[in-house]
Length: 234
Image (cartoon, rainbow, N blue to C red; front, side, top):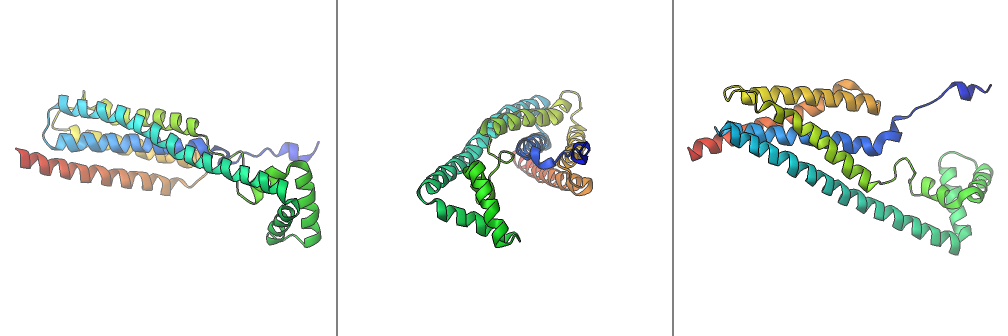
């Protein structure tokens, strides 16, 4: 049996599309909802007001994430399709020029002219458009834009992330609500950073530190604003 069959490989880049949307959604769900809860609670609002604000943040944020991801990734998808359509026309109208483009691309990667021409001819004979999409445009099935997948993933993970700090509100007393929400949120952010790093094949420390730092900063700023305005209104 070939040694290649005994050496299966799994690359993290194959998950880049939905992983980016998932991490973004969960992170935004935790940070935005926790920050809003902390800010409203710091203004000396009632627990009922804090809970209503948190619920509104969850649903509004999930819908906003879904819409934003769909629109953003759809724009990327439109650009990719436009590039592929343009490339298809160029392959039909000037095949020799397109062949030379591939040859020069392969030469630029260190392949000699003769080999580059042979590779370009073989790749073009197999699937010219795929060859140009991958090697000239940098497009592939792995990184292709998927608007609906990104929208659903972001909305779902935002909801899960937002539910964590929101779940603390009904059970924590008013005196400990802010520190309790902050502690649970930072713990969830650290866990999210660890999971994201593990699934993405990245280092654990920098990922955890990055998400917890920005989450703590967001909550601290919002708490300060809430306390400032709460005192002013009072």
